[in-house]
Image (cartoon, rainbow, N blue to C red):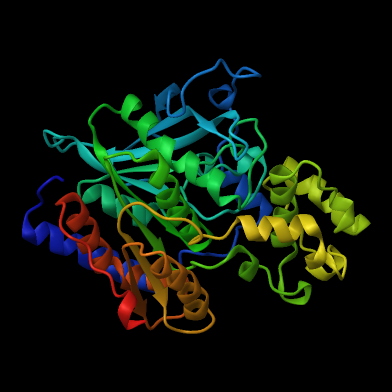
Length: 393
């Protein structure tokens, strides 16, 4: 990692902590009009042949430097398009962004890499984070770039590229994250081979799914995973229809359909729900402000396809590679949900640590834990032993 003067480093940490402690990561979505102004249009950069020319996952299709994001002047961005794999093992294309220092000289071994798994905010092609002028979590990610890291942000296949988007299918999302690192190194050769993965909100489980996938992939340059504020089983994310936003229910239906093509959404959705599903699959700027109770049939959770989807998207069911840091609020229900997954990770003897913070707001938890995140990441790249506190929880 780039060595910053202690005074510079301290100022960055203090600024980041103050900002993140008072700004929620999960903000209200903008209006459709402002959303259009804040998003770039899809271009042919995201288009690929159908089917793809066969290639290994992680192979770069194309890349381009992109200077139009609202980022600090000392943070550079390069868009990438690369080969990944679907949940069924099919060759798919995924897009993403590489963020890295603008002016500072890269260390001899390259900038160490943080692979960022973003929470889901839609299923249409134009919902890709790389099309967002402000980039989701830009201040948080730019902080890490200013500390001397490169940050690789996959869009996930189907957001940006013309493939079915696997909403919430954490194993497919994790594969997109993993292979974004290899593609980023082809696009920006100054990147180090060594990397960790980090995810927050809905993507906290994706970060752990990447650690589970690495148990088989066994990349020697993979060093660990951080799951921040939102770790839970997939089924726990979907309460009763009276307590669920309509868009969340629609995204779930799309995810089940991508996961299992034999699923018929009409078995779960009302006619109004089917019309709304078609709308959210076509455009990211068409929020469906319909109560979930008007979209879902009363017995939707009993559907076999929904049950299989929830069962498949649980982490802590197979061994993980490398250390894992779980960061959670100690308020309910967040702690109960995270502790359930933590207990499974401990039960299979994974190298896992749980840290708790007092705030209930997810953005505040991210901000309050910044110093601990940085210390943990530095220890991984310094190849220090990781701590575990399974015995005390």
